[in-house]
Amino acid sequence: MKKSAVNRKIKKLQKALLQHKPQIKAVKEVVILNSPDSKLDIKRMEQLEKALYLPSTNFHIFTVKEKKDNFNELRGLVADISDINFLGNVKNEQIKAFLEKKYDLLIDFTGLKNELQKYFSLQIKSGFRVGYKTEDDLYDLMLEIENGDLETFINEMQYYLKILHLI
Image 1: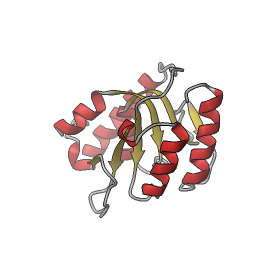
Image 2 (image 1 turned 60 degrees about the vertical axis):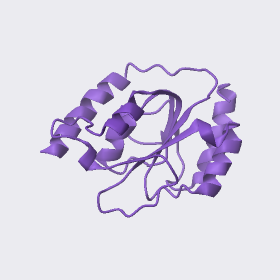
Image 3 (image 1 turned 90 degrees about the horizontal axis):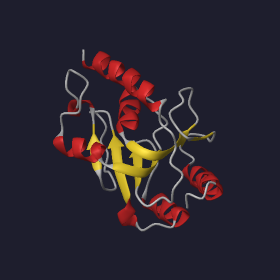
């Protein structure tokens, strides 16, 4: 029941995203969509901070996990299916507040391996969206890189964000 509500919400959010026009402005606030299997660690976070010329305080990490996952997150919020009600809406107040904020850049390291990751990716409000290449048109910049190769992902993202004058 909850999964069908999430799927309905995803379809609605995807339609709204089609109206999204990327905002080409300097990046100041970054939200990272993370998952336990994305291989994001302190070393990669430091690489990301240097690549985007931003301090760690400008990065907000949002981790989506399955209930059964045991994951020691870097920092930030963690969400799972229990944070969504039977109507497909977020019921956790802290997560709601996080999703209400507007960020300059969304970096999705999840690879959208499941519907829950897709759901939260679509919920995050950002001026510009970066992620792995998928069959869905969810990002302004889609990188065709092997999922989990964060070093290459970060280097390629930096290259294109410089061209677009976002950093």
